[in-house]
Length: 213
Ligand code: DC
Image (cartoon, rainbow, N blue to C red; front, side):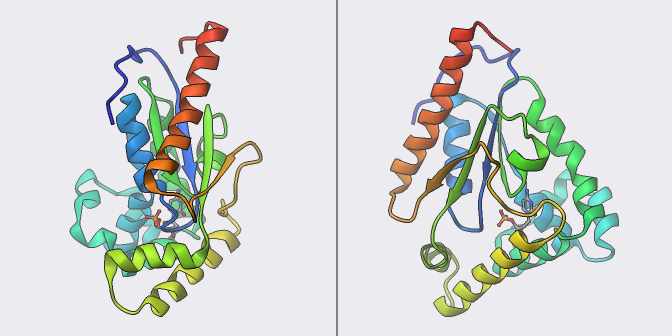
């Protein structure tokens, strides 16, 4: 897909993409960022890096370095579970908040995907999308990537949903004004197309209103 060449330089514009594990957030976010020339932050990676670092999770979050985000072990099911476990700790979330907020509101446009972007990190985001799909569909997609026992992958997906939705601090839920995107029966192209159309509409509305940033 071609990047839209527009001078976004002085513009602050945030696209918040939240949803449960393996719903398609990452793929959609990267495609939206690419299409509009926005920066992209996969916030799950921050929690994964804290989860695999070991030691005290709050200290790990406070001392996180860019190189911690490059580990090849961050994409595994185990890292996802570890991330979900440290993500319930309020001190961990607090330590990662400021960085995410600055990324979201820096000039040039940003796409952030995670669990609490539209509800906690950037409630003022210009576009909020809640991407979801049935647990079975999500588990199947994840199983195609990681292999192993599909029933075990489904169990882990459900386990992670329960923890991410049930925690007291910043639980996973759609922001009241988020657009729901159920990708259960959509192709990637369709899902990306819907998300891009929402961004396009918000950018056009801003242009009509005469706002540039
Ligand atoms: O998106 P992901 O699967 O990489 O996220 C891994 C875990 O990190 C997820 O189960 C919960 C946590 N997380 C979070 O609590 N808040 C975010 N904004 C992103 C991820």
